[in-house]
Image 1 (cartoon, helix red, strand yellow):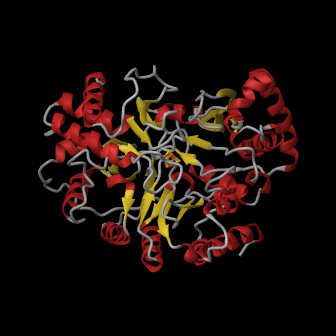
Image 2 (tube, helix red, strand yellow):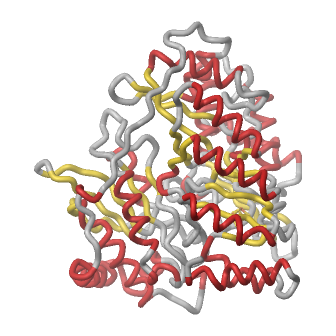
Image 3 (cartoon, helix red, strand yellow):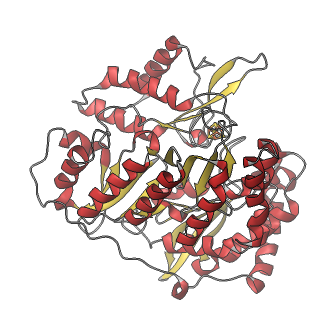
Length: 501
Ligand code: SF4
């Protein structure tokens, strides 16, 4: 066990023995992304920089779920994997096994450096500038040993995009990087002090072209600045974006540049030679297979073009959840076709790339060889993005997956079968642009969606469903709804459908 884990591990032992309560436990465990759930079992959030997982990883996690009697794993909007309902007494052993395997927890939650986001299919688009995943991984590795990043006023979130088309991702992070080439040299257009959640803001553009090798030095500089100047007395005012109110944008930029100059003298740089590039899987699904029924509809919703004859496939994961048996089956079947590497994406799905000639073969396998789970979006149920909700999360006030299911059933009634271009266009928007959260913490990113919802309790204690203002678009004006009210759900679905174009 590492020294910085000792208090947390002791905390779980004391909690299991009934010596401390969940509130006391949270103080020592939150920074590791290991939280007490509503049922007093543990949620363990495994960091996965850029969301990359292999079939070997999935089988390993499946083995742990089974061994420790955990209920299921959830793949998250921030590209991590959560194990749910791990018995408290088993947390220390599970932690040791996962870390020995190379799955880390430091910074999984609390006021720390969180999992680093990477856009989907980095390095594989026709307009990719360069693959940013190796930078995200190197940054995460260097941050692991950077103690300053684990006792911050609030969390710090970093994201990478491999092309201009994904700039929006970088603009709503505490620090965001977008790949650019300038005179043949790798650079990053750089944004900071953006964010979603309470009072969302678009980030300030700091550099047009930061030399790519300096990205970690800049991230360390921002972390130090935040550690020194961030608000520690009012959590609602503690994220980096609130320093803009305290110091002004110009003042904050000036201060960050001073920290950056100092950081360049004592923090690690990230030259290309220290990056680990990885080979992508070579798949062997049937070539030019005759597709099963529903192929053209699925193709419109699940597939996007990439470079070099490849296409990107989205595996729709019901509710973002896998039991141990479901993880194992998925990994075994995909392994048999050489699909060994996947990326967790913000819709709580998995994506992977294949040659276009194998696409029908992929569809046939997803449809027919994985049991009765709906990996191809035959129904909207399970495929409207929500957070894990209040039945599990202690902060939640509403069962957001249940509300997502109710909305999905309305969409099925209105749009299935998806047999026209108009219905398919609406379906694609539903799958990308609805995000529902069980409390205002916004884990499923409602402020970055076209239709974002959070659940709140009113002053009178009544549950309310509130359309969230968007950093990208005008707020919805649907008024406040009661989430359990079927009429409200039907009206909300109708209102959303009328706005989809
Ligand atoms: S949004 Fe709220 S309810 Fe949902 S997982 Fe996050 S903290 Fe829990």
